[in-house]
Image (cartoon, rainbow, N blue to C red):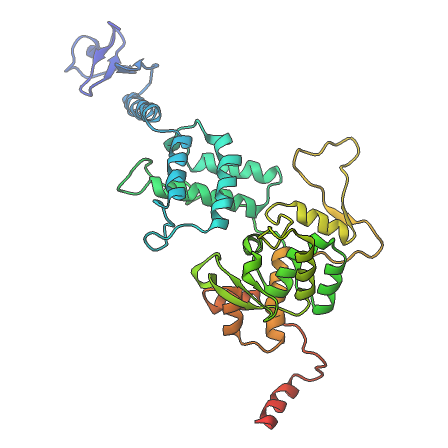
Length: 397
């Protein structure tokens, strides 16, 4: 580049036309339209620019690109960061960011995080630099999975894991990554149907009668004891006292629900007695049917008169993608989810005149706000006028 000469800006060179006075003397005034080039030792010469500012911009942006490439080569991958975070979570060294010191995640949360991390996130992002996965990369992935039919709640679960990983890695005391890129990521609109179904006592009995004996047990525990899915899974016969119609939850989602004693409804007693007779004496857990997978819900829907809609003719269904539920009989029973059965238990307590404080304690909630969201009012037996209850109380007093 003998025809290019240095300028006062380091790394930027200029070439004047031969007839221009500045081509021979640097202090002469330029009377042409010169061209400029920039140079970096690691990247070589740039293309030709018409202005000095363009050459300077190339040089600065090239420096930034080189720094990003170097940082990406030196920085750990998402897989390395995620696995280090997960090892800390499992050992208890990493706790919830908003929790108290030493307060770890619940078993249910850990199970969900494990599925998201090892089944979805690591297969997709394992070898990519953690610092290179910026907001646009995560947003592109969220939008793509949403278009492919993944629900908003499932995407939110995946994003919660990513946020926890980056929140831990971007702490000022670690600085494994510069920031948490999930803060600005937008989830798709929340158009999912909220789980607000509640069954009255007659409908609950009808739904249970339609189920196979082993499938009936977990649904009855949710209907008549208000247990969460994980609490049903862990319940043992030592925790159940059928004589006093009560049971104890040894471990719960939060401290508020741990070691709580729950009153159970009378219809649950014969269902559990029958289950005990079918099981060997050595079995400790109450449920012989797994409640942590989707097979229980599939079996229940079929027992209530529903079937999966077959794929359209000539159109193959994606692996793992279930069809919509459609009626298989003329008058199917309205399905209910296991968690909605728990709502039913809370509503039965309210209908039976239990106080909200009692309902909160039996449901294992930490505050009344959560309880009030779960409770749906069921009608009182033989109630014509709600004022009758108030006047009957005053008359008795």
